[in-house]
Image (cartoon, rainbow, N blue to C red; front, side, top):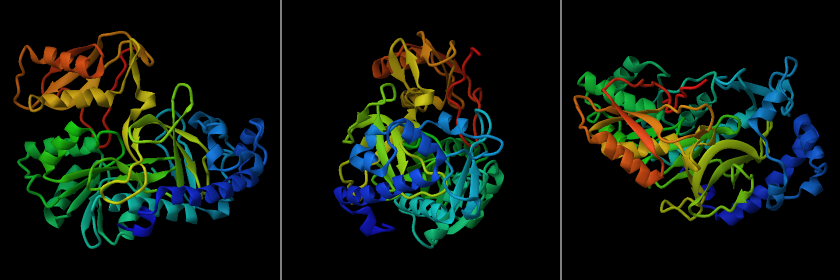
Length: 436
C-alpha cells in the first residue's frame, strides 16, 4: 500500500478525523464563498454552530451542477463559489462543455497536491509499483483527468504519456518500450482489441499485464471486464473521479471487488435517493446517487455535491486490508431510462448483451423513440455481431428474453453487421435518442 497507516485506519477513527476537518471547511466556506454564504443562510444555516458536524450534514441543502453554472458570469466565469483569490490559483481545468459553456475548475497548490495524493493512492491499489513503466492515454489538459497523470510521478513510475487519439503511437510505444501497465477508458481498451486483431498485433502477448480503466462506467461490468482481460492478457482494475471534486477519487485493488475511497481525509461520501433526496445509510449493498463534500479544499469547495453517479457501495473491510468504503458505478442518473416504471441503465443492458459473446461484438446502441427519460416498450436496441459472425435467426429473440428476465424490461433487438456501430478512442455513447 502507498500509505498503509492511512489506508488501513479503522473507519470510525477516519470519521472522527473527518468531522474536525469538515467543521474547519464549513468555517472556510462561510468566510470565503459568497455562493455558500447565501445558500446556507437562505436555508437557515448562517453559523458554524447551527451547521454542526458530519452527523448533521444531511440537514444541509444539496448542491447541483446547474446552481454552479447559474452563478457564473462574464465578470466571474468560474462562479461565485470560488473561495480563493486568483493569486493563489495555480491551475484551472475545464469540463468538455458538451451541455453548454465549459465549467472552469480552479485549484490552489494545496488542492492540486491533494488531487495527486488521492490519485496516487487510488492507482497504487491496482498493484502498480515504483520502477514500472506505464503508458497513459489521457491528455494533460484542459480536462481534469490530466491531474491524475501526476500520480505516476508520485509513485516513482516511468510514465509514457501518449494522450487521446494516437492509436498508432500508443501501440508503437507498447511494442517498443514494453510498459507493464496502461491506463485508458474501457471503451478505448475494447477498441484497441479490435484494432490489434485487424493488424495481427499480438495484444495478449504484449508487455501490458495491468490495465487501469477510468473515465466512464464499464470497467466493473463482469462480462466486459472478462472480455478485456482475455483480449489483453492483463488484469483490469478501474478508477473513478468527479471533475468538480477530484480525479481518481476511487481506485480498485487486485481483489477486484469495488473501488476504494482513495480520497479518504479529503472527501466525505454520502448516498441519497435521487428522486426524494432522502439519505441512504451506507452499508454493504446500498445503492443510490453519490453525493460528495470537500473536507480540505481551497479553490472552489463543494458541499453535498450531487454527482449524478448511481452507485452500489460496500463498507466491510476488503480482503486487501483497506478499510475505506468501496463502490461500483452502475451508471449516470442522467442516462437512466424508465421503461413503463422500470429503471434501467444503458450499461446494464450492455452487460446482459455481453453474455452472448462470442457471437456478438459487445458494441450496442440504444435508440429511444421519445425524448427524455420515460419510454414506452419495447426499447429499441441495436446489437452488433462479432467479426465473421452471421448470427442466427434466434439470436435477437434470445437476447430480448434474457434482458427481460434479468432487467424486467421489454426491448426490440436489431442485430446489425460487424462494424456498423461507431467505436470510440475515448468514451462510448450507448444512447442516441431518435426524437429531438
